Image 1 (cartoon, rainbow, N blue to C red):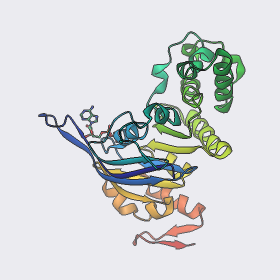
Image 2 (image 1 turned 30 degrees about the vertical axis):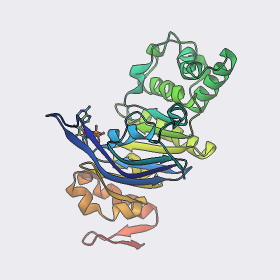
Image 3 (image 1 turned 180 degrees about the vertical axis):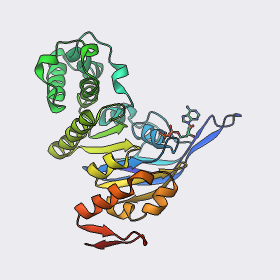
Image 4 (image 1 turned 90 degrees about the vertical axis):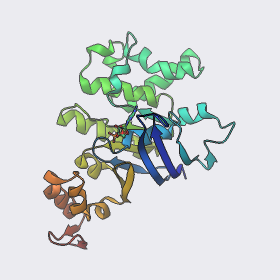
Length: 272
Ligand code: ADP
């Protein structure tokens, strides 16, 4: 077991006039090597949830166990958690700042106290694993396309050699081709390295295509947590919380592709 969240609650601005409960009673387990999609509309709590996973924010209630250890216990090695659970923020390319791509990707390992040679090896491996061609390594990150910049930013997190990769809307703002390329690369990393992947998206399309399991969030709570076909069988409810409206047809097609069919007037899934 990689991650276990027990009754996590998070309140922004606790005991102030701006108090806002962003997460309510979140219980979630993620096994090593899983590819989990987290979906929900804006404000449903996705970003708040994933920031707990590498200890960036601390729950105001509940417990978090990473590889069986209670993260909130005194003396817990937070630095290790930050290394093992790599978090790729939304628009991560905004955090690129070095003069060239290779130096930028070396930044994380350098902070871990590795030698220059080790940092370079790690960076090269990470850049290759996101499929960025070598001719770009000495260029300024600012001269790259949107999709290439994002690959560099993801490589920066991979260079830390995390066991869990958490990505917040990694395809935001990319064109359909850039989107597919990034997601294919993430899937490849997941398969080749048994990397646990948690992919946050508001796009049912992205999640349906790539995740083994889908966690649906609504108003700070998890309302579904199941295999894609099981979650889609609740398509009417998903439509009600604003996640499906234009995509019902797509979902039904997806179910068919997986050998399942969904009857339009009932919410059950049947063998096709
Ligand atoms: P999502 O990632 O699904 O869009 P968020 O986790 O960003 O959702 O937000 C969940 C809720 O918490 C929203 O109501 C949002 O307005 C609120 N929220 C997020 N960040 C802050 C913050 N820094 N201060 C106060 N409220 C916040």
